[in-house]
Image 1 (cartoon, one colour):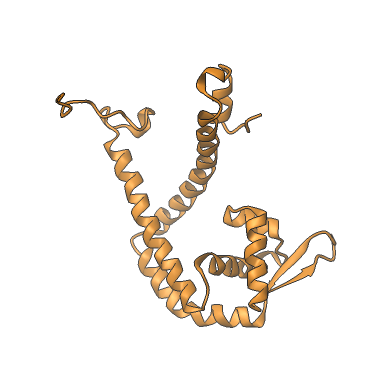
Image 2 (image 1 turned 135 degrees about the vertical axis):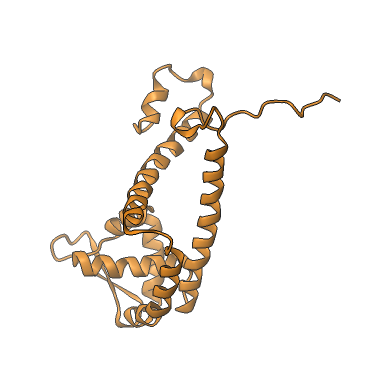
Length: 198
């Protein structure tokens, strides 16, 4: 049997900014730390949601409607989908469930009858108000290590990573289909820069 103990492990990134002395170890540490954080953050979200009788995504949609309604007065399905980085049809499915639960109401937009305005009902606000004291304590602890400057920087970084992740997903799909032999030589850079395939 061949000795593979000294076989070099392929790099997972190639950009110099993501390498230290030619190693991708720090990058892999970051990715695994993100997995750890996201798993714990999802558990925190699920705990907030369970406290008011909802699933995690239902809670996220409900509280997002509330904050957008307070800040912008009018909340559409498309605006909510953009805010949460989710698809319009998925948001429609969740808001329909929240409507059946009596937590969200839908009404035609006076300025555009094709659009629907989302509002939180009195019961929806009651549940969010009931959650708020515990929610504040938990969120303060979870994000307690951040200074004001670090918080602003992290917020900015996350926005940029969401955008680049969308491009990465398009590139991944492009590389999977069609086979490399059938791709044109100029297509790859366009996908990597965010230009939709086709």
